[in-house]
Length: 385
Image (cartoon, rainbow, N blue to C red; front, side, top):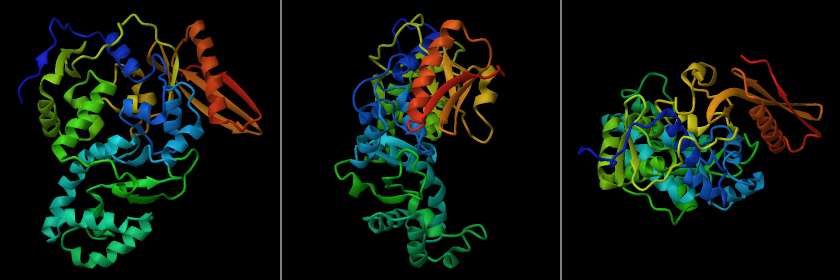
């Protein structure tokens, strides 16, 4: 890959400068305005394996968000829920789905494609068969049963581990192309989802060729999370370094470079304007599995290393946290009993009085958003960990 041009006069970026850039692009310095789909587009999607979490993440980033507005965006096909980056459920703006879906599928196809070839199967043809079957909403059980008749497990036993079930469906699904049908993605909706061909649900959204899809996805990422390293991009996308480098190369002169405070090479889109490191950062609440924590290989720009074990668990869980001066400073949770909803904050250390007051005000608004039906709402502090 030819080296991207370094920004003229660019100095090594301080940790606080990276922090403020990240908060600015994520709408965590000042909440954005506009529609749910526009905000989710600016954020390059939101982690969504738990139905409620993207609502909370967006509440902290978008002025005046209502649950009904985001549900309506899902119902009207302006936002979709699907398995994209890192093979994880996300909410993404409808126009972005094709690029995210195609680029994400390449990782799965690299794994499952060899199994299909050994079995004499065309994995692309299997995917087309799956999408034709899903021209109307289908459950996973329906898709598994259908593909058990197309290619029975018994015919594949020489090519997969013993005991593998519904193998043909797994192979067919590697190529992506499906989205969830609402009410999947609605607030507090945890039922078994139904799936439909993205081409039926989003008929005007194109599916780019893989190199173009990767380029478009990384462009979205850098706009929402940059400056970032190659490893950061790989962590967010779930891709190997090679395809990431190729996409960066394809972006050509649009890419500029700088260095982080610890000497890592960082990539960004030319023409971005970020605030200086002295801009105040208001207290904010992050959701469980908040994308701004997951989207980096090196997370110290927002999650101090000392607090990482308390927030990022070994099982892949990222606990709900809150920010003080732009950095994670504690955990929060909401419990509801006997008509009262209580948001509890557990700081990792001392929180200045002004920030405590601001967090209490923000926390009261959040608990009313999360538990709108409760009769009473309260905010409390637990003892520091």
